[in-house]
Image 1 (cartoon, rainbow, N blue to C red):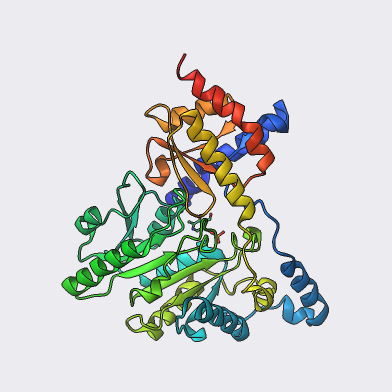
Image 2: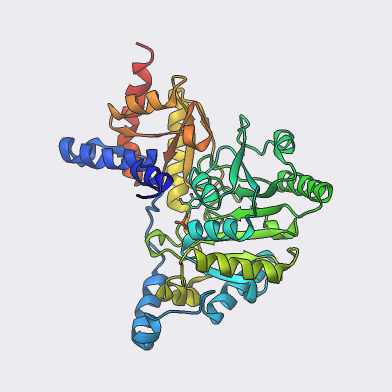
Length: 394
Ligand code: PLP
């Protein structure tokens, strides 16, 4: 009567959502101050004031039938130009506004890009740890997702990756700064990956695309450098989102940038437009396209996240927990105190701590801690982390 696969996806909530719902119920029962919810990646800092000013300005100056009306499918031309100018200015890349496609956040950008590329028998590759929705997005196209196992320090495992790449590999999904590890892949790793993909593309006689999922691009610490992939490799599709950088996840706004150096870039862009049409996106939210003309260059305030990162990392390691120090995004991976991270996460709940088990990220034996929360909540949660640790030495 209905699609079994869709039914399964819809009826099995993600572990993250499950924890979030549990947290809400627990807060009602025990009180909000007894719950330390580190489950979701919802930005905890307000959107910059320029966003509000721009929204109000749009309301005043725009004919509402235009403002709330459809835009062209790929987005307004001046919005795409503002995005292209931003990329040119910041990364020195001569992108073309006619190869920019405005999307409903990074999730839609990924779905559209994968759908645009996928042909029968294709596979896509990603590196663990990875954003679990990649599996859903890839399989939706009819392709399959191969996952390169995680390295201890969460860097790119290129020796293993080489074993996974074959004639069916259409693209690699890369996410840096990374959810869930907070890793940022440096220039040396990126150059080595690009060299591998260039070699493999030549060997199999077709391009292997790099799909760069970068919603956390601006959220980095200690001045760490995030290489812009278009400067290192030809066949790059950037999937960007303003969900995290401007704290606008509910407004659903982002874009796809097809590198002008892609093989048959214009034809690929048409495939992107076709995929957007098939998936029924029609156009990205128009009001939030318009605000980008004012806000594309708005700086991301990472100070609060950095303060949280420092407090969590130093406190947890001082307690004896093993953590991977994040260089970007707002997640920290911590080793579970027992082999099964699901059991550990269950136990943590008894102390009011909501920690996401790493299994679905390809990081068995770890939990993910989202620190886009209030500093105060982190301070209050520390005795609970201490008590959880003690409970394993009894
Ligand atoms: N990619 C990664 C790595 C993410 O963490 C997220 C959201 O958390 C997304 C994509 C989806 O972002 P958006 O809200 O822009 O669709």
